[in-house]
Length: 342
Image (cartoon, rainbow, N blue to C red; front, side, top):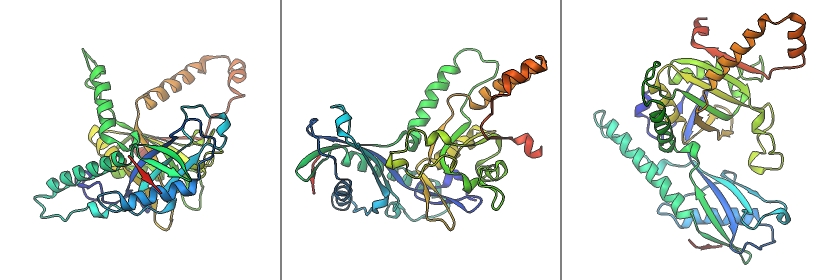
């Protein structure tokens, strides 16, 4: 596999287990009525058609977006809506980015070409967000205002700035542990079966997940669990119709080296996961661990081990009613061990 530092933001990366990371642009959408007192439900189909037509006709490069890549959730009961609340929100995915690619001139200029392409990609993404933000949509005589933003989980530079500020504060003064830097990535919303052992289980496997993420570097800690929280409270949310309890997993991976963490997060930002033979695109969310997931896990394990000295009957009463959720953990030592009208 080519070095991650030389991977352009518009190029697909093939990893293990038939999985690929495919580039795309994601934009979050929020729709407010021009008049707060509007009581007519928004027409999702008309809204989609208006936005698709805008992308085709109002950008410097015409962009064609399939209807399934424009996800809209409307507020179903306008009577419960507050005056400042939106009537709908959604997400737009632009997956055809071939027009941004450039030919490589030579091996010597490859790194320079990648930086230039990255600058071009980020500039074009910002241009689209700014062009769409604030447009007015006229749907059946009712006017709506559109707000557009780039999701934090797709904005690598924004996340980098956040961790640099956090660790600059933590690293002030004397530290016996040396300089601190982030090293852990959190990935949510990926299909469990893509990380499972075929014909063995539909639940995510530590071994398979470790093999996949070893693509990015040496792993220190790995945690894989069914992501039931992702589906809670979203039963009526069209954006989460595909999120069913038990079908998606949450992966937390800690790398040995900061540079591997850095490269992996940068590659995961702005991409979707696809599997060979499947038409599904997993538009996951990725971020870096601010909360010390593995440090807190060790503290919890220490608390449990400290209770070993309790009387057996007392320990039985305090722990028998509890059942821990399905969680898998693996360490590296374990492996050895504006305006627009329709």
